[in-house]
Image (cartoon, rainbow over all chains, first blue to last red):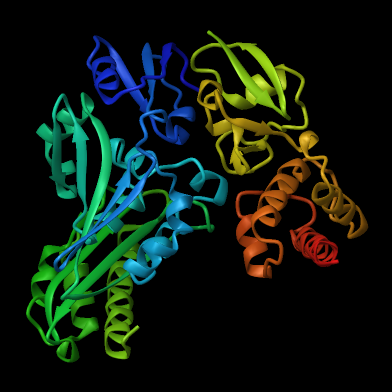
Length: 289
Length: 156
């Protein structure tokens, strides 16, 4: 447990939470609290509980050809797993992918917001959100929104240290057909990933309008594989060679070894997982699933 | 800090450290059916129901639970709980017994929302519970049996 918690706050408004967040000294936000409760830091900290700010809603907005899903930052991951609406909107991708995170009791507490504010290298949430081009909504005195890729940007990371993540936004174009896959390799079902990989492909008129591939637990933080994405863009789905894309991904992803798996083992996995993910997605697209 | 928690339908006053973990507060207050196992959220021995959802009390701050309804295995006294407990005994699903409070919490949470679970759903519900004695088969059978009895009774 945290060894030196000075105070536990229950702000009743975003403005109050933001003021507390910007006090002198270190503050941590509690959305699910699962990672923090296990932390062993001896530094003096103050905890700010976000669970009374009504950030526990999932909103769906359809406007012309755009469906926007907004997931409040304190919505529990298990609620998303059980959401029939999200299942229908994402063709099962979001609930089925999130179900691979931790165990049932952990998913009952953990949140997407918590996974972003402290992104662990082995996080399953980050690659999933990367391939959906998710956006982070936050409040730092005023409301703001940044693409998920901004977590690699040091200045945005600093902004988040003083801000409150209020939600995650996912936009889906109705005129495009999007299918996605997520693979996690771990030693047991609820162990952290040795490697994880997410891929999404959006097609329009049988051509790939957009492709996303992200690899996490490399063992460093998940990143997109833009070389593979470029190779897929504008191709006809029937012309894609999953094997070739797998090879491109293997040579493009920066991989290293650690106590869980060697560099070579992870490299082989990247190639195979990419090939399988693309094969599955193309099959789904061709079979109309 | 002083907070009030509702545990097993009883309101209790706690004087806690702001960073205290729910597991420690519960055990210090005498709720020893909540077991301390790994204390890393992996084994499920410390599981409680928080507003009806199974959660590991070692990954939750006590202060977080303010305003929530907490139930330990001792607080499960309705017919479904009795059916589950009896079924665990009948099927020989208990060996050393350390994991059983957590297992019962998971099983109760599952059957409360899904009275007729498949074997896969039972396995998924138990994926946060580790048992080092029995190998899970007996517990899965016990839950299935309790579900059958529960459903039969509900349909009468």
